[in-house]
Length: 113
Image (cartoon, rainbow, N blue to C red; front, side, top):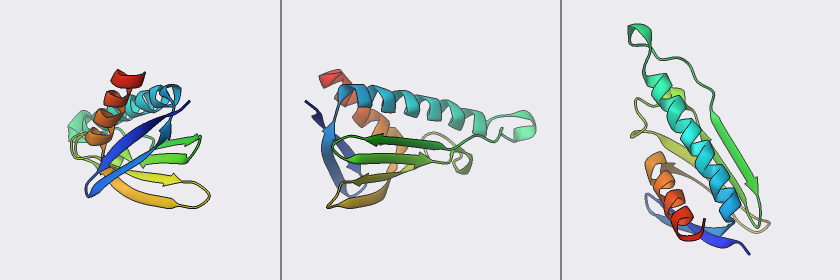
């Protein structure tokens, strides 16, 4: 049975059913994004290596999409992701701090993973 995942946003939060397996997949995708952000910010002559965007999608009780272009952000701490959470009756699209989303997923995995 999926357990609720809470993602804290700048002005509130969103809670939806999410499985520990899906949370592990999201955690891995966010970890890869963090690596890409670091690579985009460093490189020869102060220019980073262009990196591929994160486009994570999960279809469960609700659809979750997380998008981030690592080439837009000066550091992982400045990075924001575009979140879309939707089902057949509701659609929420907003931005959230990458580090906050990573913390929320890590906390979920500590408790349920």
